[in-house]
Image 1: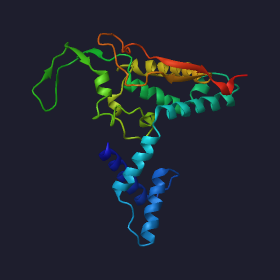
Image 2 (image 1 turned 90 degrees about the vertical axis):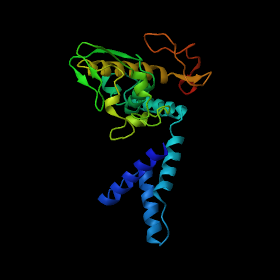
Image 3 (image 1 turned 45 degrees about the vertical axis):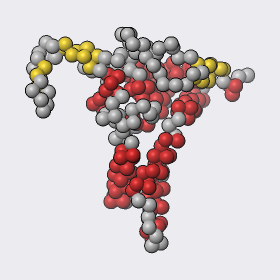
Image 4 (image 1 turned 120 degrees about the horizontal axis):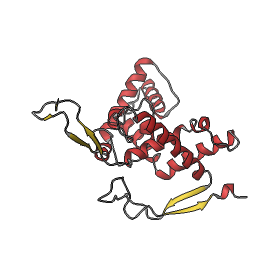
Length: 242
């Protein structure tokens, strides 16, 4: 994770300093502090120090309660703008909730594996292994989505990794609704229905895990199912009670 943070910060620092690009974000603040130190003849923060600050800021902002509050605020503001109506157009405005759903599907895909049939002979690169046409294949979706090679710091729940332009994921390793011509349709429908359900629930209730811990899964299950369920406390939101 440290190497990842350092590489990201170094890339953005160099990119912005070379192109003289300026944005209103945390990295820009670090750039301004470095320039100020250099103008005063002082030693500026190193790339490693900048990375440490970014990582601290990043880690503090991905607490799941913070994520839920941010998603709820987005829902409240959207519903308020549209008189409480839930329509397709309104749901498309929930950009952060969209990121939350995608990250949830990464950590907890509906199906842990995907079955496919090989359509032509394929030799695995840098090996003597040949997958023959007609062979049945099993794609371990859960294992791929939790592999640090494709998703750095995979145990961390971070919706921001799905922001456009982010490099904290491999887009070719993400297919919670499977692969093929029907994938896009299923993905869009699934996310839309999830948005509607979450908008209805989070706009009216608060949810608290009564036993917060790492989710364990049933050893034998076609779909990914939590072992012993997901105990939680549900309360009607006081700020909307009349």
